View (cartoon, rainbow, N blue to C red):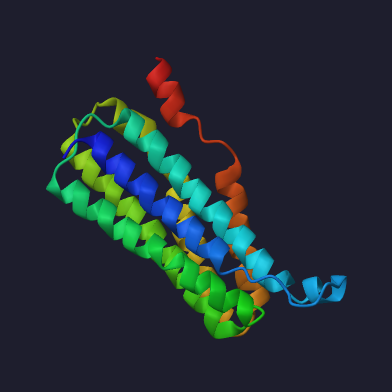
Length: 191
């Protein structure tokens, strides 16, 4: 399989994930602002998850721009990432419907943690396939943001049983950190 097919398949899966999430949003039956206000937790969880899927899609796209080739291990590592991302709609719906209760917030964090670990594994498999001085290796560097994300997810999951709001705060922090553009790959491609 070429890297183009891997990227196209991943794009399709992520598009389906977003479609499933938006289909979970049910319009209120009453034509009032109050009825809409009751959907606030559902909408907030959707927005957060949409941002996370967008971050993964964007970073995956940039990663594939610099990758020269893929092998079977990379394909399985990519499927591992897509598996965890495919659970985001379930965790999102449960968290929103239960108004950010502890168990759903913990499950949401576990899904995000596992997706983050899966992305890290994908990058390690790609690095193993490319020379140590490749553009990919130079662009990824020590991957501080990836490592700190994993740590913050672990802290958030640990906090979720007592302080689900604090856990959600950590999820938002990770999203904000990744929304700041990471230009490592673009800089490497331009040199």
